[in-house]
Image 1 (cartoon, rainbow, N blue to C red):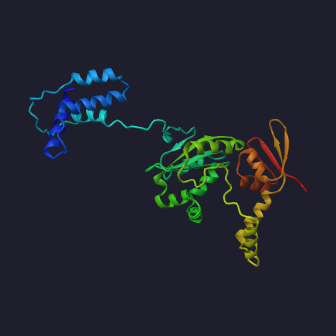
Image 2: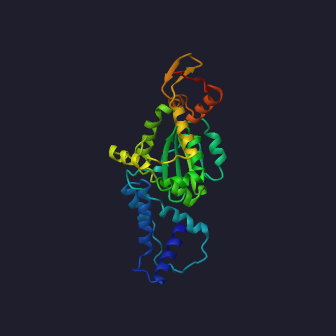
Length: 304
């Protein structure tokens, strides 16, 4: 308390010497400080008043500034005065703890991010460390999704459509942290993603709806787009992508190696979601060796 009195007298003198708006007595300043602090600490009104009136600095003491006050004299009382306040009932986004790994610097931890999340599905969140703006989404193949974000060409093609892609290009990966909020089964992705959307309300998400497919086009607009494309020559790359999409739409038979259960699905994509891997992984294996085997499942194409 001796240090508190000394500091407060010095503040009073400093304010007076610099032309403060009005003179404040040291005793009033000390009482107000104690009252505010003890109230925030949970003391009842009677305790606050009793403690605040017990401490009265000597009114006859000579007030002189001490510009070289020790850090101990300054920091102890100020730590009481500058206690952060939060509105009652306000949502603290930082209180939501990630259940998966946290990567503080996405730039220098790129290799760890991709290795740790190989073959996993769940909810991820990008956060700009300065300002706290965030983006959250789900993916059946987290590694594949994040690999896109680490591809500058991909970011350039998406920057006009995606706020997070534009931000990554503008500020760089080092300005962002990455969290895996939760790993979950592919079948639970939409429900879990919506849970975090409601809690976080991430700033970089244009739409706060899980699994939102984006803009819905009318049949009229679709017809105009088809007409505009008539006579257009497709590049070899585009043809390859279209061929890959057709491959993914082929019906397959999925066998659970542990239980022996067999399921027939209408596409490789659905098989990939069931197993928990990327569609490209299933289609590549089937194209190269005639079947996919992994994660306790075997996938064969159905002969039509």
